[in-house]
Image (tube, rainbow, N blue to C red):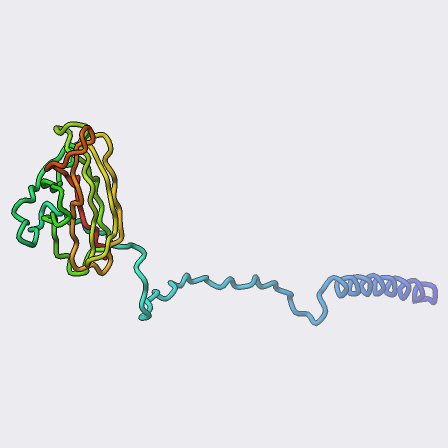
Length: 210
């Protein structure tokens, strides 16, 4: 082989070698460094477990009830009057100034202040006494009766009533042992004469708060 042909052969070999080198270099550039494949691992989601809060227990400390007991009502018509004149008290309905009071007590009032047939033992249990006192509707309008409510010997209320002028009474009787419905006078305003006149205590009742 002559010199020109040798030169051409080595030139071709060099060209092929160069192309191969370029290909190797390109492959090296596109491969991740270290030769290890990079894998992406998705984060593992943790399961959320619902927990039940601990049960609440009632406190052992004392509590005040939010509800209050209803007061009890005792009508005098359901009680037995004390004293020698208790038999003269009439329980039952009364009509005072056109209004009917189904649970009432009544008796005759004279001219003596010692007329106290309505005497009741409370034993200190009641707190209030309520009634509407008046002369019954079937009496003449000119009759007037005066009296008082006595508790353990002390005057708690006074009244002067007629057919046309009753009076509502609401008084404190806390710690009272003996309650008395007392007459002071009964008269006819037309001639100022004294008479025995009927008087009613409409729905006379004792209130006992628990």
